[in-house]
Amino acid sequence: MVYTHCELLHSGTLNTSGAIRYFISIYFSHIGLPHRDTFETPDIERIIADARKRSDRRVLRLFGIDEGFQQRQLASWQQLMKEDRAALKVD
Image (cartoon, rainbow, N blue to C red; front, side, top):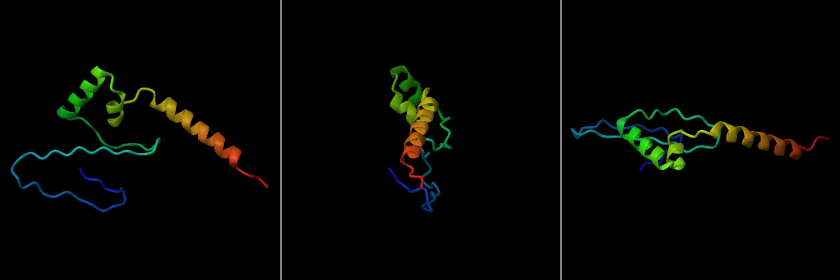
């Protein structure tokens, strides 16, 4: 497993082994930040299908599949704005 900071300059290396090398990238981020990965490979599709069969929302969420995400995100932002407005001290 490799951890990289988003502002760290990094790169991969040429695969000289003669074998296929797989790379799966998952980003954990604060609510509301978009992910840009696509997971359209047979291996990932099998993991997702298995998670759906088991109703494993945690695994599905790792791959950006979360039916109620937008509603929870909107509610979170509305709560944050309410708290921020209440905390503001206007002279």
